Structures are given as structure tokens and as C-alpha cells.
Length: 389
Image (cartoon, rainbow, N blue to C red; front, top):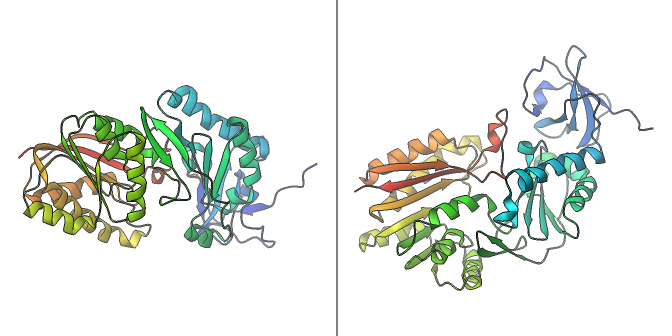
């Protein structure tokens, strides 16, 4: 028979459906469970609330996983939750019909707070955001093997997460890259390479939508990373494609992705700010311009500076869009809201002296679901526009 779980008591009443409970709301237990231990959670009135991970070292002291008192959080629980996440992708979203690369588990969006899993063919990339998920990783691997027999694993956790959550993980041995296909376009996903998971699967549907507006067009992909939008545009018949990124390593991967698809976009290693100023001064204009920069900040105190940087780069990017051309701009900074991002775009258009018509506002693919109780999980903002004049 299993030993009873430790009990953690809250200081105040708790009625929220959010899975996170912060340290200031939690009574410090006399005997402190190890970071990531599974515990019972009771309110200040002693009434049972749920089961989840406890971490006395983290700002997020509790991550609630289960609210049914009759359901234990054990290996079978993980197997069931991961099976349901996979069923959503395969049976409901039918993602296997368009790609063999998709997000398997999206943390709170799939009821697995602190865990992200991406699939790239036979390679599963597992990222830990909580000590609890790391502590119970063998249950996670077993559940994933059930769904993906013969799969390979690459697992890691960012250093800032390990520091915040108080666990040490050097990561697994680097896994060999996987060649994946989405909507008929091939990419090399290398989690040991320049990008931590090897490829941005969240932009799959945005790449596909925009690429069908690129035939016979001149296309500029700013902050192109491993060439996703640029390669798609070239495959769909763009007459000229230029990709710009400051990181030489991702430029090399982008060139390799172009070769996989037998297309020849031109990739340039450069800082987009001086490059765009020079392009505008030289009268360069593009029919389609994509701007997809990296995350600007994880710090709430740095949101205003992040928005200022977004403003500067969007203003410059708008300056090289041909009249009547398309402009696709993105933000993966979760702390920047859609409202803030759209307001930034309004101001960028004003300062650039351009009239911008918004055609579509989107986000990450449906394999990145988010709960209405946890809007923080909705991080990607995608705005597709036409520049009128």
C-alpha cells in the first residue's frame, strides 16, 4: 500500500481554477517535501482542494494537477493524460495528415503544468519547466513510449528554470537530427543545434497560409532563424527570397533546409536594423515581408523596453514593404498581450507613414492549446497585414 502523501495547507480561501498557487498563499510545512513531490492540497478551512507538485524553493509553490479526490497522480495518471493529449492531435486535429512534427504536450494547456513535449518524426524533445515534471520523468518517458513505440528522446531544461525550480539537469546526450515534413516541405530538426528544440513547429499553419500568397513575389524573411518562412515561400514559387538573421549558425541550418527542398533562397547573416536602414535608403521594396523575432523578455519589468524594440523593428520593416504588399509580424513574448502588440503595430505604421490594413490575427497552431483559466499559455501573436500605400 502506498504511503500517504504529504499535506500542504493554504493560508487563504482558494476558488481559482488556475493550476498555480504562489508561495505567499501557502503555509510552510513542518516537514518540507523535496522539490517536485506530489502532495495533497487543502484550504485554510481544511477542505481538500486537489493534488499536485509542491516546491518550497519556487515562486510557484504548488502546481495543481488533479481535482478529483478519487484519482491518484501516479504513472497511470501520466499515461492517461499524455494519451489524451496525443488523441487530440491525432484524432481531433488529424495532424498526421499534414506533418510528422507537432507539439505533443503543451504544459498547462494539456493539464501537464511544467512539461512541454515536441515530436519531430521519431524524435521526442522533452523540456522541463518544473521540478515536479523532472522528478517524475521516468513516468513521462514510459507514457510517451506507449504512444510512440521506438521513439528517441532529447531532454533538457533551461538554466534559468533549473535555478528557479531548484533542480540540476545537464540534459540528455545530444540526439541525432530528424528530417520532418509539413505540408510537403522538409526541414531538419536538430535539438542539439542552434534552436533548443530544433524547429519552431508552432508556426506551421502560419507558414502554410502565408506561403500561398508568395507565388511570383519578392519575399523578405527577417529574423529568419532556420528558414521556415523563406523556404516555404521558395517552395510555393516566390521569384526571389531573402532571409536575414544575426546568428550565423541558424543561417547554415537554413541553407541546409533550402537544399532539402531543392530551392535557393538567399540567406544573409546580418543585424536587421542596419540592414533595413540600408535597404530603405537604396530603395529596396519587397512584395511580402515577414518579421519573426526571438522572445524579447521573460521579465515583467522589461515589457515596456521590449515593446519599444518591437516598435523600432516593425517601423523599419514597414519601410521596405512595396505598396499593396503583405506584412506578417509576430511576437512570441508571452508577457506582451495581443492588445499591446496591435497597439505597437498601430504606432509603428504611424511613424513609418504607412497605412496598414489588418487581414488576419492568429497565433500558434492548434497543437498549442491554452486554457481560458491560464491565458499565459497563449504566447504567440501573429498579425497578417496589407500595406496600402
